Length: 418
Image 1 (cartoon, rainbow, N blue to C red):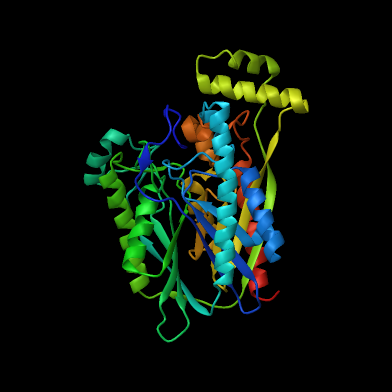
Image 2: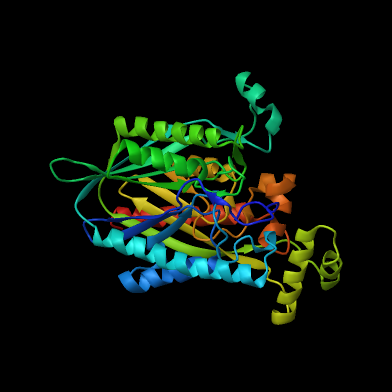
């Protein structure tokens, strides 16, 4: 199981199914976009690229037209080498992971193929709800959260928005075909040994009960520093799932903005710089560390040094932007993105902006410059578990935001026919 380094045995059962779901939309000019929702803690670059490149070949797309969204459930499976330093598996167990990863690739492609085959005239509309169970975990000690919440004294930035895309058949019954929705909060209510989609899974289950025949697809926002608190019980996971489903349902029943016009998309990988790299001597010392995660990362990095002669100084970070009609901008970022990015980009691009994280490649936490300066788990120590050699360089926020601004301008121009 993925998500926690303290686990010492395989899963022991299943609380809920785990899903790969796909929604494909096409504009009047034939431009298609494919959104895939996955009940995974994350996905690594190699696995993601293999899936997306296969879909490009099959459907004549480019990478800008496909987004793989992971829910970040911490009760899902290990996939590929995502968070590889966190696990201490033998060869037989890694073979199980590899076999499952190949099976998952086929399942994702099959889900997208089925969505393409099921294309039919639909009407799309979008809106935004709200729910507030996310708590800034850097600012609020977990044991104090109930009292702080009751007193109205929770601290730190949050993004309580619940973006909703409604897709209904364009025929006479106008039946609901799909609901695509997001929220910026870790899926860490549960930490036991049973498979589950955590609160996003329960939200999707609840919505599909309320709207029979509709597919509910979740995407995670910039919730890297946000936790569902309190947590650790199935009842709380169900409660938060219902709260999120309620917010979606309330939005669906209200006045939504029609989504008309054309679709446009941009995808680029930017060289995101890392900070000062460790020396071989430092890695040799780390390999002897009593912290088994630091030791395992050092061993991995020493092998990279031996194989390639150097450690990477940058990472190919994926930035993607979709423009849905004349108004709605959907920013899609890789990694575990902190909430500062969502707030900054909405302020820069306008309220008709959605910002997703955990998409296409979950290679590390993506702190803002503020969080990087403050350090802590999101800013520094989490890099160990992802196997990166050091922290990010201070320029990361500027580079990401500049790239998003460029893409937003490009997609907006395309939507105007420019």
